[in-house]
Image (tube, rainbow, N blue to C red; front, side, top):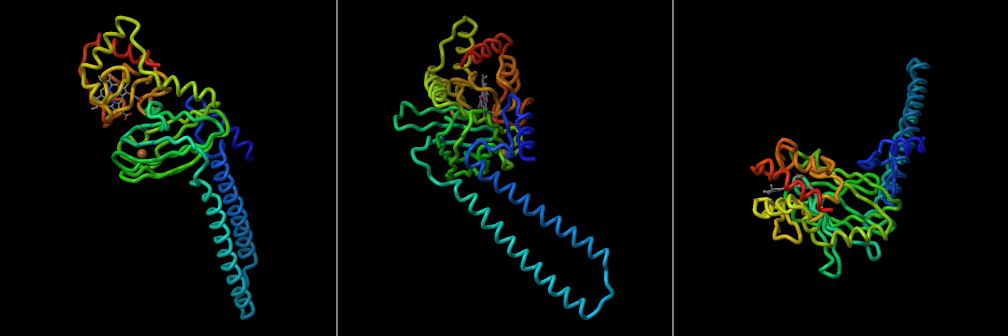
Length: 324
Ligand SMILES: [Cu+2]
């Protein structure tokens, strides 16, 4: 049964990553999974018992008598006591399973996650300030290493939930929450904002990409680089357009003078699998479509439509899709 659920869950994972509580990929998720199945088992047995007693009662409905009433009183008393006991046991189990979720780990990788309407800003902290790193909507983590996520929000309450790994914890403006998890197997795990945060709440996804430590370090070193210089005349024109337009007031591209912080950091935008918080796969076409008309693709989001000529659109998308 459980194996079936797990394989079904993995089957529908696809390229966008798996998103299911039924396939735990780390100790915290395994604990919650254990709790889930224990609840289902215990409550299932109780349901069967109740149905059994119901059938008995319907089948052998007796004529009221004094002896029968005394017996009924005893049965009701015992059932009430049993219900109380079961509730206490479930509460203790739930406490035990969730207690371990926020304990501090030794030497964790600390990642700051800030929720915006409707995307995620991801900051990798480091003792060396020159190794601090800002990216968006995609969290790379090394397998087997404890991750401490510091959660905050810029505007309204959001909630971080990656069912395969851990969850849920709110991101609250003006307050910091903490969550610790470890991914024990490489994979792409999809997460979802789990607190209604406005019009595009359903389009506020994120991916956690768990990879072997060496691959993670290589990813981090690549992300620390400034944006790669344009290689073609078209890309060069794209960069010139970008830094001279409102784009640069909202987005940062390290290595250029674009240093805005209202939108996602675009220094390595093409290295990410999706844009607009999981809405579109990153391709030149989707970048162009997004830039041409972000309000039709994700109505209400905080990126305005900037007017430009078709040549400028082609140039800026040619440049952005090269920012690996
Ligand atoms: Cu939300």
